Length: 612
Ligand code: GTP
Ligand code: MN
Picture 1: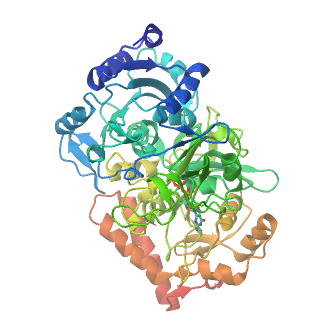
Picture 2: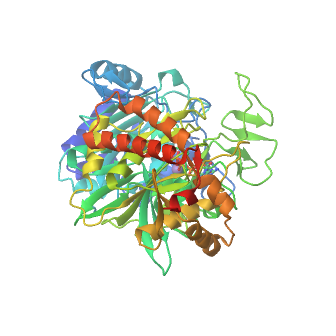
Picture 3: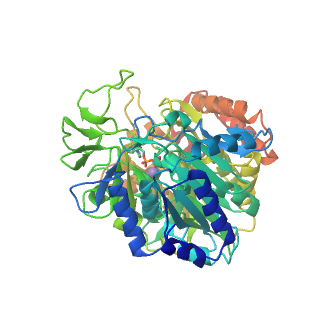
């Protein structure tokens, strides 16, 4: 470590930080150690280091770079992401853990000497806005300039914030090494490990580069935060935050939790609305109101199907000069191409599989697409035209509505409002979703994913739900809760509601929380009236929304719903759940059964529920 880095470390006056850095050096044995502050020069240094290291390559457009992850490192590695725990535990919905001493021994052995010949980067970040009671502090040590550069785009700088710690150990610590590299990618993938220590608030990650595995500040810090939140009585959630722009220049803030690949970014980016965040939110009760901040300051977004028609704002940002990182797309003549970009794709180039030609197969005989389905872009939020004016407000934004969504091709309606807060928590807890390419494994399998948070809940499920149920206590105004589903399909497998329709559902919810619309009471909650959606469609989309379309998607498919409830009984019947949660499940089933008896039909039109 040179004098300057040493000086930067000293100035923090924090023995715990120093200890972490010293331990990491002893373990990983880097050739060089560089400590960074929030200074522009340090950020610029990282950017050029990523290029010099060949972790990123410059593209034709000013500020744009491309980074490739290994062919088998293209999603979150769930099987190898584990908690380090001392004893056998049962969290209700399963927990992937390893005995702590054994886990530490294993990961230390993989980290031992992992930075030989490499430069160790020491960075400080703030999870949440600067100078905010919401925010947590994070120390990241990595040998990947790509990882540190990505975090510079995605998080707020925290060196100065660390000074405010006044020497305390109240920060998260992340140690990452991409391990041995071959052609720029981690080669010891069989030794990819991501181990989380909830007691120490530390995460170790080794032999990987894909951001979901390597960037400690993203889903790994999120797991630590969920644990901390339960202990302190606030919520850390897998949620976007957006300003929904209703009539008369009204802006109403919503948060929404959807599993990976199910529409968080797309929803937060709906044209005409403003984005606060698209992935992780901290929610607290302040003066009896729910306030929320975006933990991040950038987007690590799925690039597939980003095209001028569906995502005009992101598309424009991706095709304009400015600092951004593409990952795992096709490069031809230093220009990026991806699936569903709405443009002709060249027949050859370089992608995550190396030199690529159309029709290329991998060693298992699978056709390799021009870009990976989970290829991504990394960009600062302030590069977008639709960033909300309060995106960095240390006080957060007031939340009036909470949305849960999943990927469901055949059961749930496009939007429903919960009957009560408790019913809303229930709606969040019964989210199921068909899997996508954002995690490693088969696609299109229906999986239960409560609050879109199954992968990240780092406490017993009972505790997590209890914390949600009691969050409404002492609130002057309780946010309304919605469940949405953008992914209903017809008999031929075609989507029934286009992406542009999402605006209808969200604007209806905005009108509801502000008292503009009445709703139809059904056994599953309150659904929109046809006339209201028709009005919004006319005003906002300039289309005639037909009664036929409405009836098709808002009809209650009673047998399918009851089947879903049977699946829920299987899940929740086996674990300890709060009494009022079990009551929600029981009364939901009862309401459905009664409705079936009353109408004697499988499918009930929303108009039937209007008849008294
Ligand atoms: P993560 O970033 O992995 O957490 O995912 P996300 O929740 O942000 O998902 P995102 O908004 O990026 O959407 C994932 C994919 O679903 C993209 O390919 C979108 O084009 C597609 N998508 C989003 N909304 C809709 C929709 O309303 N209908 C359909 N058919 N596809 C959608
Ligand atoms: Mn996203």
